[in-house]
Length: 337
Image 1 (cartoon, rainbow, N blue to C red):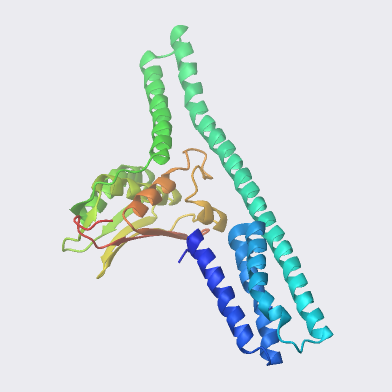
Image 2 (spheres, helix red, strand yellow; image 1 turned 120 degrees about the vertical axis):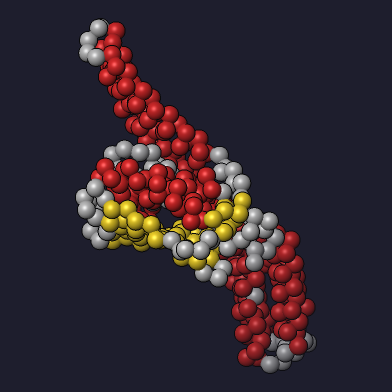
């Protein structure tokens, strides 16, 4: 549980008060007293972690204030007792200062790292979008120039221009889709139909590549709250990826299994597979090792599945194929997500 700022302050104060009370109660027992003195470092470090240098120093001052009655202890204080307690206060102050500096330094480094990562991602995003728009744009300009010069077949040129414009449109739509929240309209749907429609959309591609695409679904309906359109989009991407990774004659299997509180959708291929770096980064926006595409497909798919409170897991091995596991909770449309 993540405490709010005020809760941290109250907890720190309570801990210090209880620690000091325990300290006073066993004033004459040396060994437990020494242990309790060391425990004062815990709230000081806690204050540093939560509030930085300022928090560490304020926690130290509060701890010292509570410690003052014990500092003088009894009238039988020896010189060595006084030195011992003074050193405890001194070392506590030094610890508070160093802990606060350390935590603030780490936080600054984290912010700088996040900023550098953001700028690097921004540059990567810009480069990817420019690359994906540049190629179809070159095609459009080339065929437009040929038409103007009266060269070549106009119908062929028009077809190439239209196809390139559609590719550019696809890039723009993918970027827009990822940049805004996915609107989910959940309705009670038979998930078998969603899978049939998604696999049907990929069938032509599978036939073109000579890949065997099979669907294994139960005989009885599996009704869950889902956005049929968006879920199809989420499924089409891993199915297409599986087809692209498979060679002629290889098999891509889509399966649906219903359990008590969960439905599991599996897309499995036996194609080229992915290395560990690709698996680790596959859901990052614009990450792709393909020569074409925006690298947004799996990021959008995950966004849709997350919106259904589901999970998507990728298992892959180079040369042995890939398995995509999608788990969705069994809910009715009336259940609030």
